Image (tube, rainbow, N blue to C red):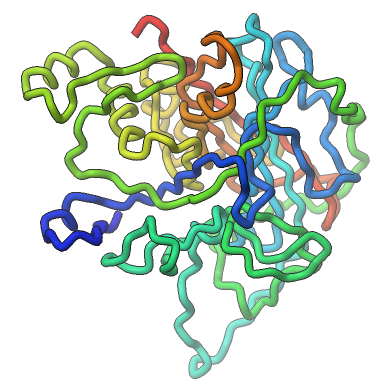
Length: 404
């Protein structure tokens, strides 16, 4: 993490903030440049002719169709050159299915083109290449250009790669999108000379399966009228790398799910803080304090990162706190056997955004929704080059602790 220098003339302010590697997404009714990544609404596809089996959109508890919570453009050109990726989080709207395993599901769609061969330039031709900004690639954010730049300013170029962005419009035409959530269909893979060595090359995580067999039976995706009423559609915009106060105060009036946390915070003394800490779970306090620095965040993104846990007492919390390696104890990919890694998580403010027009308080009850994906972005062996493959990925739901 690099120190964040504010625009203030006070030199002490520069040392009081830090920038993390986590990209934060926020919700808005209107998109910036990206129309691919959003909360609610109905799903859109990489290829309208290759849809997932309808069974993947059914609740495992009641077998009814679910609604979309999140659609995310998840292109990662550095890790997976030539891959198009999208993530979809679905949830059941039935009250009787809440807090039950299988009432939230995650799908990943991937289309893979042949990765170009790596061209090794002569020593005298090697030039230092600028780093890819993940914020620009994924979210369309400019990020911070140096330790002295304000990362919330959209004017500087960042040094991290943003997996949400794209530079090609549907149909193959290029465009200069500054929003990394925007994701077009590339007509052909990028030139080999433009690609640095990727994680896939270094770790040999390309899908080794070579044979192609017939796909299993698939249930056609139904008309939208077969689904429950969707949540309102809200676009993901203004992604920035997370900025934290090095000495954060206890969060004030932070809403987590349907629960409010009220604390004296800055106005209270040391005694108030000690009493508060003794009365709540420390992991939850860290969770509340962390999101209190950026309370309107709806999404946290860090491929091969670590989730911000709502609790360490439930099954998901124990899995990550006791698990070893980047996978944090998540089950391995059921298709290729590789390790799964954390990619993103939905945050409580997403509930407020999605349910803001609904009457009453009888809504969703999760604290966070954690998504783990195959580290190799594999597809089934019957999916040919250029075709779209569908995989169900791992999701861990940490439900709101109503007794807290």
